[in-house]
Image 1: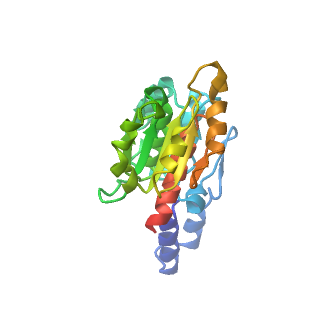
Image 2 (image 1 turned 120 degrees about the horizontal axis):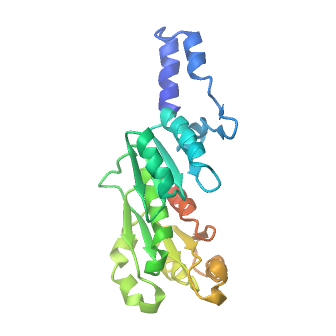
Image 3 (image 1 turned 60 degrees about the horizontal axis):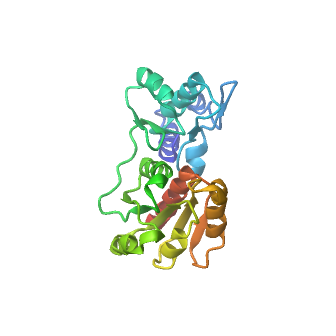
Length: 252
C-alpha cells in the first residue's frame, strides 16, 4: 500500500464510503505478509518511498514468483535483481506486464513511473565496457524508481579526453554514478569536476592484484575529491537506489 492509497482509504472511512471492517481487511497485510519462506514487507513503500526489492540468488523460481506476485498486487511495480533468464521465462507465464534486462539481470513486474523529460538526469558513467553490467543494474534500478538516466560508457582514465567530451552532460546531472574496476580512479576524477553528489561503484573487473575489486574499493574510499560516497563491490543496485533517493529528495 502506498501513502496515497492509505490516505484515500482513511478519507473513505471518514466519509462513510468504506466501513471500518472493510478498512481493517484491507490493512490486514500491514506491516508484512508471512509466506512461510519469506515475510513480504508490505509497509516498505510507506516508509521508504519504494516497495521491497527481490534479491533472486538463493531463492527458487517459485519463491521469486510468489514474492513478486505479492509485491505487484499491492504496488505499482516489483523489482527483482540478479535475476536469471529461467525466472523471467516463468514470470512471463504469470504476469501480463513483465520486462527483463539481460545485461543488468533485472526483472520488472508492472509499469514503472515515467520520468519527466525536463527532470535533471542521473548520469551513469563507466570506466570500461567490462563495467557495463554493473552500470546497467544501477541504471535500470534508477529508471524503475522514476529517474531519467543518462548513460556515459567507456570513458576511463586511460583516455581522459573521452570523459571531458561529456563534461557538459556531467555538469547537468543531479547525481552521478561512477562504475569502475582496475584501480578505480575514475570516481575521484569525476568528483573533482562536478558539484553533484558522486556515488562510486567498485567492480570486480581487473587483473590479479585488483583482488576482485578490493583495489578499486580502497581507492574510492580514499578519494581526495569531496562529495564521493562509495557502495560495495559490484553493487549497482545500491548505487541506483541511492541516486534515486537523492534526486527524489532534491525534487521535493
